[in-house]
Amino acid sequence: MRLICAKCGHVFESLIIDKEIAWQDVSKQSVDHVRKSHRAIAENLAKTVTIASINLAVVAHATEFLVIPEEEEFCQAKVSNAIETVMTAIGFDPSEIEEEETEDEEETGNDGNGGKEVKEVKEGAD
Image (cartoon, helix red, strand yellow):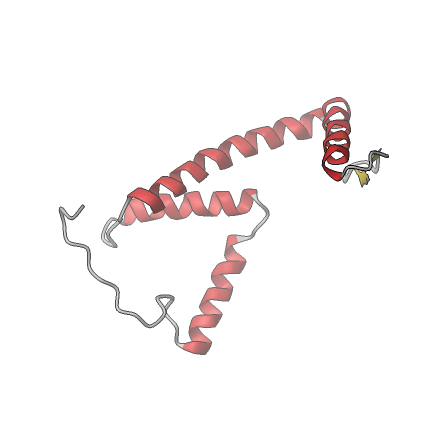
């Protein structure tokens, strides 16, 4: 197995036949290399991962346990911002996805709910 550092071109190789063990070997080589050669970048990445993890927890909690009424704009915005942060951290550009959704809606007339009526949530419902 052979992988290459995206920052400097350093090569990580393993001659181990078992792919899982080879992966572990080149991964360890890469981590050791990054600690020595790209420390500042790794520290910034660790901060980004921490922020993304916190925001992922917000999104997971909101989608699993909360119904946020449309009039709760502040709460809607907080969850939307958390989603955008997670998407950015994993390499997506949220603005590109919003543009695609807008184009799809304009072309198909689809409002994103599959043509179904959305039930209103009664207050106090469990």
